[in-house]
Length: 369
Image (cartoon, rainbow, N blue to C red; front, side):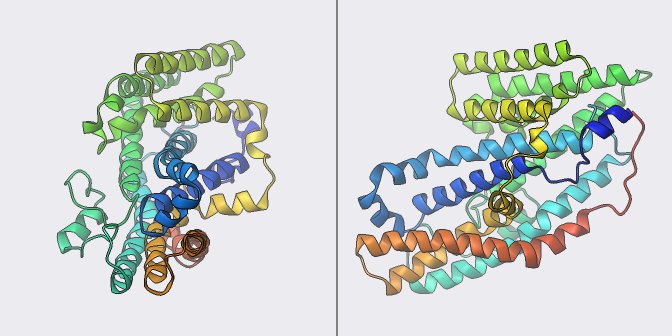
């Protein structure tokens, strides 16, 4: 890797304040979406603020697009900073990714099943998942629950499976580009970008328009690819090449929106452009300087994993012991929001940090680019 790039951009392990801020806000929107969509407490809050609760219930879920773009951006940064796969063992890299992502997720599933049992003692509600079967749990561990049409053990866990599929798909494309016989590194870079670009456009113009594909990475690869390409285009040595490729990326995405407007893709494009701009200007690594956003971004995965079961327990407790007064019900929503973040913080420090270390390689073996 050229020394100019290694000095210009911090190591992939360094935290990025802007990315943390995006993750912090997006994770809180997902929590509020689940609080508005599931459980009886939201009915009382709806009577006080119908427009706000309706927005959280329906539109706040588009925050998932933020995670998709960031995931593609960070995967490109770690797997192939110059659009050439650097790991010598792709399958090992894929296994390490599974361990880092899935072990905290499996632990959270066990917590979710316990919370469901506890909530079931206090209330009966259609937001409570049915008692799990062994095969249902195994399908979740294998990240195949949606593909096998299994009922989810917790809200939002489909994203963990999709994230792993997307990472595996990007890894496959990068490996295929690197395997091109007798090709110089420049050509392999171009091929890798072309493969991601081509599949991203296929997603934007076809797969993402058909909900029948929403259990597969192809449905989401448009947003994921926007993140990866935004990172790579910003690394091009020529300013003219950077500008023209980013313009082409924006224009083709806008064309896909003209062809079939989807607000989620508009959100993804906006996030990708902001990340690319901040990377070129350098404030990706320095702004915003907010310890609160930095911390919420750091614990966002744990908050995402635990928010639904914790919210169920709070809903159940208020249903059993609280009153039907709308102010009490709304207070219950706020208590649930706070409990989700506190539980997520505890889970991050006690579980996620420890388990995710198991998926980190002790030594990084890379191939020359």
